[in-house]
Image (cartoon, rainbow, N blue to C red):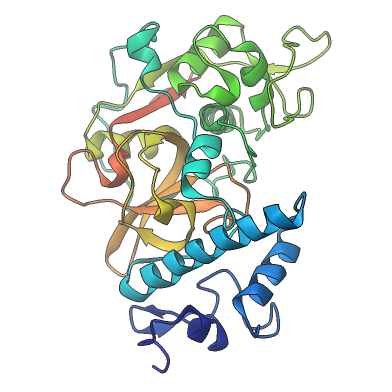
Length: 358
């Protein structure tokens, strides 16, 4: 393969954004293919093209220069990471002009400490899938019609609400056969006893809110606005989707996690405070994660690729991030907590109806 031994970012650009990955060329590895744009003559040309693609505007030339400098630093990290990595790769996405500390402050929002500081969520101490046997080799709840399209939380730490809603959407479809997009905004506005809107929250508290209020409104009736608003929980003539309980997956147990995921989508907290996670583009992630449980996603399946086992995760940063908004993370790492601590905090809603159960 030509061009993989250069340390120059500009060289990578002139080669059509090719990077080394497991002995193969992938011209979209930093977010563009050769068809997306003519090869730029400079990094600033690339920045300009990226700005147009992601509809970025800046308040002043000074702000634009600042964002350009951040863009260059992020691009260097992407190129250097892709050169030495084989299982996953990074790419230019909508966060390419965002400094990493800014990113962590604005787009992460899991607050597991709430359970210790404010109150313990009243989750069942049982695990209904404990005795599940003969698990399938692979599950993909997207293919089973239990996953709504990828959503976008925007510049708000509301990942906890999106993770909660995706899990409830999943179990509701599994039980009723109807896939209905539900309202993250209701949780943002109304679930404020222990959760804190854009300031972060915890899925167990959100499940408890939905139970206590006898349901959650649909996305159509209560749409997302990317910021906290006024609570409108009582809406006449509006349908709500109910759950009857929730349970925690036993911590640090991949087997328990897979048992639950084989039956329904699962809300998951992970350590996602790394630049690799910020710019994840594709592949099976087993890299740097960070040190704190800061982000929430929804596990929607598991499978294997060329002998590598992985979990399929739905994120809430839009389709421009990752694999069309999804994230594959390695399983079978041998660590009880899993890569990025994905087995530490996981839970799922329960929707009991006559004649249905595990």
